[in-house]
Image 1: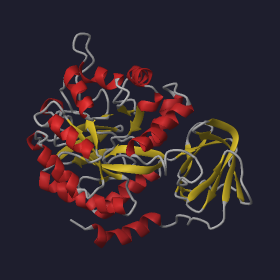
Image 2 (image 1 turned 30 degrees about the vertical axis):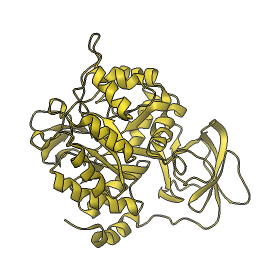
Image 3 (image 1 turned 90 degrees about the vertical axis):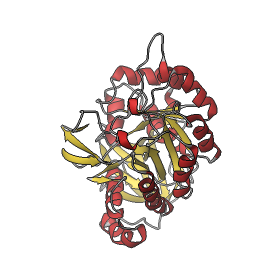
Image 4 (image 1 turned 60 degrees about the horizontal axis):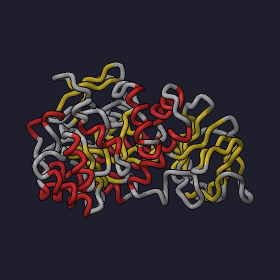
Length: 405
């Protein structure tokens, strides 16, 4: 396997070829509907100075003016659960391939991304953690999410059952240590032996404990939340359904204000009524849209590997070849946003919260990303009146140049 230091240079140059470098003089994007934390400014502007936002709402000072009227300006998207894209896997790809996957999602507006792994041998996952942590140190990803192997065989989804194991705190600690401070989240079936102790361990080390791929009861889920779990991994999926006598984990996760619920808004993983239920009970400030994307995102139909399991992608839906279980998604966050505001009836402001502000706060990065405010990174997405993506800026550089002005 290639090492980050050996391969990154050539890959990084290839991926950035043709990108417009950040200019040294201020620029002001003006005339758009600008979504700020305080609301939407109908004829607003954002001033960019180098890699940062200098002002938002009204123009400030002398700057190059770029007319973006009839567009929306919103913060760059933040994906806290993503396994790959562009034909590349974050679990098994080389550094060049991982960078290709990251770049694929940037082209769709995701300016901050947490790389997720799938269940594998512990030594292999520790090795991957080392590779991904170096990319996190270089600023290419925001950190690492371990989805598995500490999950329930009853709710394994697209994970290899033979590699699953109980969440022994010592083994959880092994992955945290291998990530060198870049572990952001671990998904656990907290009802398994060692689950609650592992939640406490994660909380003590500042790592998000996420409840997912779980067969827990309502009472067991409440216990895990009390121990420090704060995220529901793709709520509704890979967990017991909501029952009138046995409400299970869904009710516990929705009712507790300390929990952020992930939703995969691709039209396949969730019925629209389930999404509305989550927003109604959790509120717009506790929802994070994710992709749960695998290699095929932004790439196309065909056969892929998700960890050791073979996946068939047809008409954009990924399923295991053996058994037919849904195997992640081919979603990109620009599609999740458009679906939210055009089909699901969400306000633009609530969709922005679910795609930017909430995940930034969850990751502890809301001082630098997640909203259009002075001093924060110049990460933004430009959408036309139909909510189709027209431009993406990351840290002051156009990743997708709208060729305006």
